[in-house]
Length: 283
Image (cartoon, rainbow, N blue to C red; front, side, top):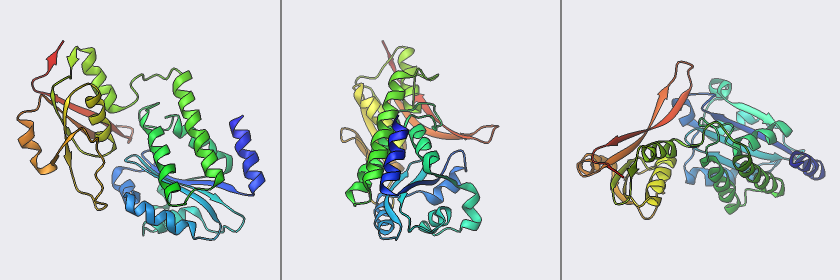
């Protein structure tokens, strides 16, 4: 029903959807990193894309596992999207085009809905992607990057993602590495209230870990690295220290959390959460 509605919208407005990007199934972190975006880079890219003939709207999703550019195109669009995707980051399509995936029309719509449901994630059904997609749409809207079709598409995708998580019993009940690690400790009787916890890393996974610990009443400190954007996004309730001082904080921490990335025999890169307990209190 939802896909039929999107198809009717496309026909009515004479637009088409294109989704071009790179994710953990396409390439390792070293290649994906060449196409990652800071917030300031996203702002400049969205502004530039909206000025190009044939582009009615754009949303750019950039996470540790993927970068996706979703475009709504008019009849005037004549560019090849892989070439555009590489050009935006100053990379050569001849060198990196084979790492990229490209989907158009209903294939792009279906892929976006699967993404929102956590069905394209390393950890099946993880919740974080819903927030990331919503944030990406909000950010594009802030700089006038969205149009009616993308607004409708992302709203429906997020709604569908919520329905998937509510109505489908996915194999994994812990839908993110941080939640799996923390829930595993709780199943063993761990209590976090009042415990000093150090989270190493202030990326998306670090932010989620810190918030989960804060929700459980822990005394949380997050290590901070300064990125080119100058933007640091961690829960306001958490204390912050420079990454270089992490060993000093470790002396007094009951436990620390650190995201790791490992290579499997099937050449897939997976994230897992390393937890080291020093003085953990069990109930």
